[in-house]
Length: 264
Image: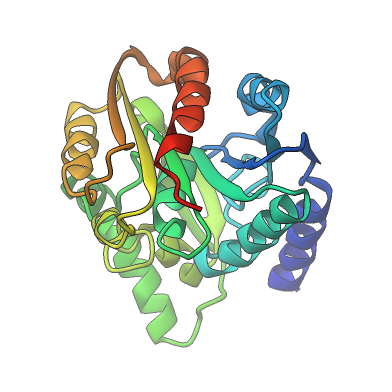
């Protein structure tokens, strides 16, 4: 009952949380960070819509309300539907714009066909990084044990890692937890970066604050991105809490600038 009710709730949330507006050739799928909500992206979303960009703002499984109610592969199906909605609204180019975990997820998803570019703002969720491996080693072990003993959908409690080293108690299933936090799982950022196609434009924005090691890890990951003349690294000298506000114009201008590199 626990899993079925959460699955039903997830479907309903996705159906009501996909407002798409604006028309034109650019389409943007904007993905919030962990423990956040689509409403926190309002300024960026409003700016994009004023620029005649079709925008979808889904509530992802890692929001403060959904609390990891779906695994990464299940999230893929939700994003597939959101991308299809953008294309149905006459968007011929699709950009994924993510913050925090949303940024890390966007990098992973962008290896799929049909993604023109990604904006990764504070892509700090990297389960293969030394920091994540150290913090979540015991949780990963517990989750694997539950799965190996035939309890993949039991209730699994852990303390999530938020920006600036804050922790938050979460409850999900062992299988879903591993899809986000296992270093060998689908959210491995190093593999995601290396799997990016050369024709995907990347705007990589790394703010200050938080854990210095995590920030350096994000900066180093950018060096592994396949070269593209439109890709850009922004070493942003503001904290994560102000990073989106400080980046709005940069994001819009960068998206418009990538048009010159598109050969349709």
